[in-house]
Length: 110
Length: 142
Length: 90
Image 1: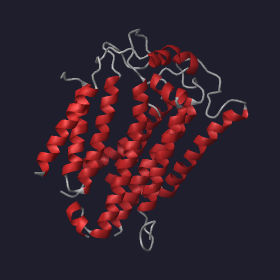
Image 2 (image 1 turned 60 degrees about the horizontal axis):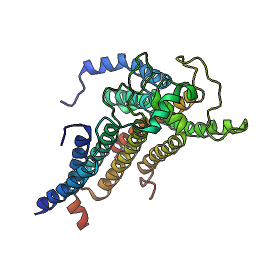
Image 3 (image 1 turned 90 degrees about the vertical axis):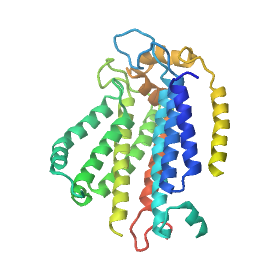
Image 4 (image 1 turned 120 degrees about the vertical axis):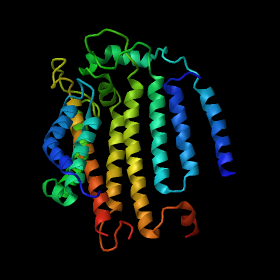
């Protein structure tokens, strides 16, 4: 498997999934959620790469351009990921206020 | 060490207007160079967060009041929708690009894109600052 | 035991994901993006193609995304209030 953006994007998504399944602290789970988001963004932007292309802005050079459509869609994805993370962290703050712990094992017992 | 070193304080106070200016430049030149509404808005919000981290939220609130930032965020969303409706008064569809094009390469070209960028930039910037204010104030008054 | 199950699941997932993304990396020819690049300046007048796409050709998605961000900021604002009890669901 070649070492390009697609492989690294898939590996980052798998690291995020491992983090959500294994960790017991809520804040570490929220961080793994954001790592998964970043992995998906990297994967989609790397799919739209064209070898020897320049960035998607018109300057005086006349080379081939990379694909600007996944980049425009991933901009929305990044902002939605920011929204998800901020709401999840606000919920974690409320959980700490109510139960005084952030460990999922102890939270299941309460 | 739990005190912020004076180098960080002095540099932040001196650099803060330039970071705001850079954010506004990214927002307004979004259709000519890399940048746009979201990118410039994040820089704008990060400048306010930086000042709040260094000086303390009480001092930062004297200049950037939370009610005003929240009002800007809400009105920004309203203006986005109203900008969509202005196209319908002339017979075009919702959120269509009906303004005349200028000279390619200057700022007032590209029609409605400039106004949408400005609106989104202010909305995202003040939204991030409001989230920061709420989080710190909730934790510090317990 | 827990970790062995997790690593097995991740290996199966990795096998499926790596075999699903069998693209010719860097040599595709997307037709829609070629239309956007060749007619971008004439339609919109912007030099930045990404901005022209997400603010002119696909502006409806940007409206939805601005609404999501606005709702998120409003949600955080409502969750972390300091009333007599503290939150919006008190």
